Image 1 (cartoon, one colour):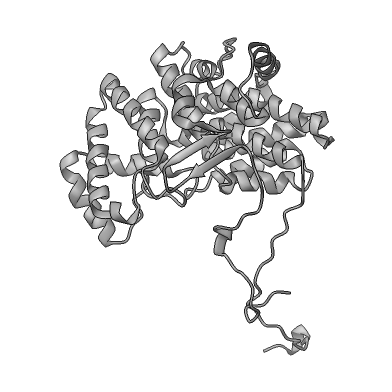
Image 2: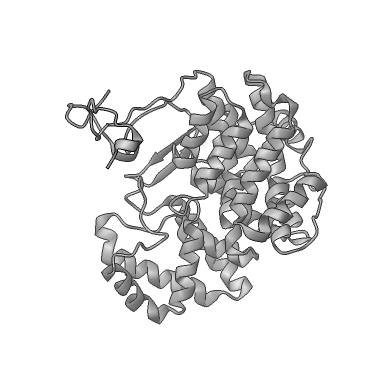
Length: 383
């Protein structure tokens, strides 16, 4: 037993504690770099596809043509959800946040998969690929259910285009596909964050990949992790115009309110993902008529960097992603499920990697209570 009186290392929230090794992704918070398997995120965002990046994260290299074809074939082999699951999603979205619906959907799929009781690597890989393949249709169906609209089933094999088509009932433009594909790539993996850690803890028990992803979704649902872009957009809409930015931000800082979309536990410089999304947010805002929203965001950025930049507080990926998703036509409540649509590749890759040299996670806590021994008093004699 570790008690508060004993001399031992203690890191609240496990901050800075190294608990696993990985070859998948590297976050350089000092120099503002995000690296997937040795590739800078800027190059992948410009040149790659989400499926290709997912293959890279999972298998450690960019695929050949035949490997890519085989991989996407597996993703699309069983990529639709049935009517029963859509009915469940319709019921869930009547009274709960879409993330609750997403969590329920993954749990349901795990319960329906007869192979979810198998724990070998091949079975875990097959479950992950099957689940990842269904994710565009699951999140799109949640979007449709929330709006009270019927489900759409597309035969489009592209991960990004299928999701957009099933969400809105029309084929996306080339630019919309490119923007959304970029957003997915930028969110695919980001170190051992809360949701990724949750998935790894679950898989370390030799549970199944559905359970690991369900754990990750439950963690991502929290506003301190997955819901920040929704709150950042709400803040921008409340500020309203660029001329209000300085006054509102000053008042929020005076009240010690958190400015969503700024600061990061790892990055002490400008988040490289935010730099990329900012350019797309501007172009989309111009195309969709949201220019004032983007201009307000730019002014808030200037105010925040002027006030807190010396403390390492800069825009993070959440600040501009909300503008991107709003401009594409998504309701803010769907922003976090969209995050999961991307991050499932990281959850899957990290969990699968960990299984290859698995060790059950078992941290310890520091006991601060009474050490006793106390004498038990029968309930009739207690005062």
